[in-house]
Every structure is written in C-alpha cells, then in structure tokens.
Amino acid sequence: MPNASLRPCLEQPCSALVPSGRCRAHAREQSLANAPAWVTRFYNSTAWKKLRAYKRAADPLCEDCLARGDMTPMRDVDHVVPLMTRPDLALVTENLRSLCKRCHAAKRRGAPRGLGEVQGGHDDIGGKPILYGTNPQHMGR
Image (cartoon, rainbow, N blue to C red; front, side, top):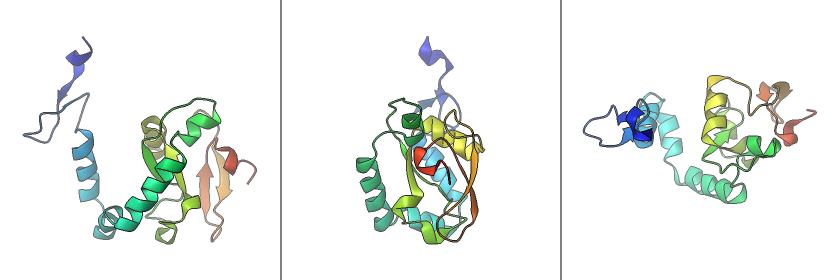
C-alpha cells in the first residue's frame, strides 16, 4: 500500500518512483539549471565539496532538530545567510548548518526553522539582517 501513491520521476526515462515531482538527483539538476552559472560552478567546486564533507562529519545530526531534543540525521548543509545574498560567506564554516530534509525544506519555504519561533538577528560580518530559528548558537543575538 505505501507504494500506491508513488509516481515515476517527471524526468523521462528515469525509472525512480517518487511521491511527486522529480527524484532527488533530477530535482537537484533542475534547481541548478535555474541558478546563475557561478552558483552551479560553486556547488560543483572541490572547495565546496571538501567543506561540505567536513561539516557533515562534524555535525551529522540536524541542528534544528537537535535543539528540540530530536536526533535526526542531517541531509543538507545549509548556508545560514544564503549564498545569493552573501557570496563572500560561501566557504565560512560559521555560516553553515547541518539540516534534515524537513528543516531545510521549511527554511526554503520561509517557515520558522524546526518548531521554534523565528527571531530576528544580524550576521557577524557586515550586520545584514537575517532570521534565526531555534539553534542555541543563535539565541540572544
């Protein structure tokens, strides 16, 4: 019964079955296809891949879920201040967070991170406004 709601990926002839849209690989390709060329080059760079691997090893659990006491494995390395907003922070470790699929999707939709209230804050470099969720590192800023 769980497979009853699965459909083929929208990218043909891909045979992956998904709840909707594209499989993970094709969704990423679609996302990168819509991004400026420099963003695609950045995410394919050796420097990013090494830093991402370092972050995954250092923080293997979702930081938002962990703040709530849940131990959810991370899936994505997220830029706290978006890459498009501050490309100069692209490889700054303090600007990265480990997030699970659910928390990363919530952030991308603009929803509060995790289940906590969204708080206003400023980044440490340049004072540009950003939003923080329940991550204890960001509380009280």
